[in-house]
Length: 426
Image (cartoon, rainbow, N blue to C red; front, side):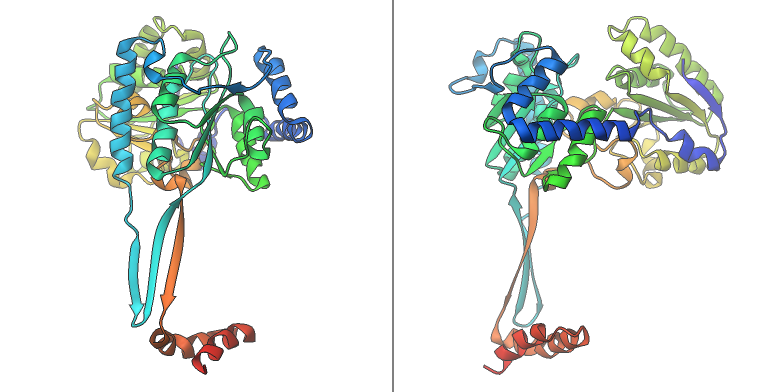
């Protein structure tokens, strides 16, 4: 199933860390065309792309939620209860991230402080397609709610009937979404960036997607719109030692492989027998998977790597910088200090990635494609600006004034020095 690689040289780690990607220049050219078209024709262009790319003809992207009650949405009661429990856990974990601010008197008469101020209007992108990710609504909207964002705009592709998947709608209403728009792909990102009559421009865009969505988010930054992170095709790396349960490892790999044909899964183990056992279980388990074709395609560009030395194995893991890192071991905590780069880490044989995907409480919107070296996953601070304040009394300025003037004059900025001296001499 998985291509086996035995004791690779460290010089090969960068190459082994490459993801299956399209040519980026082609991507960016196509996405820029979409941005240009939406800038010219606004809502008409959004609707045109929805018809062209999703095969759905809409008269408007607006999905009116006025007066719609979450309890009236027709989904299984068991699913409603599951979503509510996930909401509760996600809320608890992100609520604990609240900061009361910082107040420091750096010297007599000088008070410095920092406060967290929520972004005003944010845009959430929720992928639809073959797997409507209602769980992503919870992951992105709950922290926004806690942060105090005034407007939460949600874009998601229309379903086959030109409407919205009921589980996405239920989750949106539960989380207090301000507005829903039926638009997907790069055109949705472009619309939330540029702004149209029906889809307002936002301060920051959140959400995962395919490589076109990721490229669109990166392009959005050129239009003074912030993004959460580059978050493209999903991925997992499992590190398994002799105490792993190969059947569990195979299940975790398939759980990620079924996301999409461009997903990637990596197994790193300190014994060849683990690779063989996991491959055996993959063959058995994939035969019963409804999304077998997708998972098979994902496995075709995935790898099983034998690295005997533990520290060398984690050198590779940190080079790969996985979105999800599973430590399949009954001594998982002993590896924590070796982990430098990962979006989210799952410790132990009984901690499936599915828990973080849905309802443990941590966020599942995470950096992919090696971006975990530089970015964190979505958290409460993602929805905040950190604003600093300082107040200085006359005594404080007397204490600091000479230092300020000396530094300003050394930088040949006399106006800066004058702004201090005029006060000292008043």
